[in-house]
Amino acid sequence: MNELQEKHQFLNWIIFNHPHPNREIMIFLAYLQMKHDELQWLEFSHDVIYAPRGIKISYQTSLNQPLIYYKGHYIYHRIDQAFHDFRLNSLKKEQSFYFEFDFPDFEVEAMRRGILKDNPFTPVTLKVIDQVNYELDHLSRKVYKKLIMEKIDSALENHNFDLINQWIDQYRSGLE
Image 1 (tube, rainbow, N blue to C red):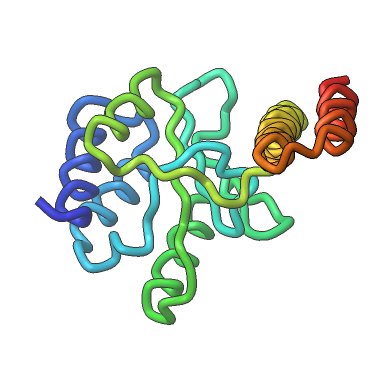
Image 2 (cartoon, rainbow, N blue to C red):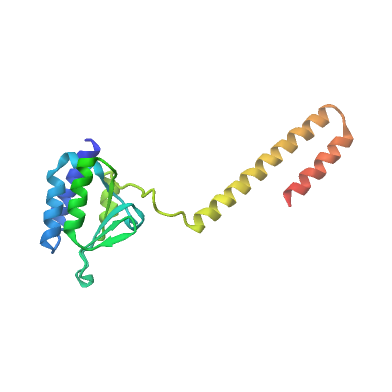
């Protein structure tokens, strides 16, 4: 089964297992499900607030905002705005729309079907940057030690004890 078929079946699953209380949202989802070719412009993701075109469909009736449409730096709450932009985008073939739903098993079900995409527009967190820096530091120390050990081995083979002592001192200073 290809990705478009998986997206189609996932939309079908959402419509039947998580029917939205807002009629316009259901019509929008049914439209997406019927337009098989336009599913290529739809990505299921998280943190859609960062995407150039992101649509978050909320099931929390207390919020009174069933849909939030992020378009660049603008935020819309009207379903017709998102619908018409999606249709126009499908005709122009410009860019993907990232969809996020806030029911509990959205991400699990999308991952199970292999259609949950990482949002490439989500900013890198400081924690990730710290982890990368730690790994790079660890790797550079490891490579440094290996190079010094090769130089010590070479000096041993040549019986150059002055160089051996120099490389051993260099090795010890690299451990600090």
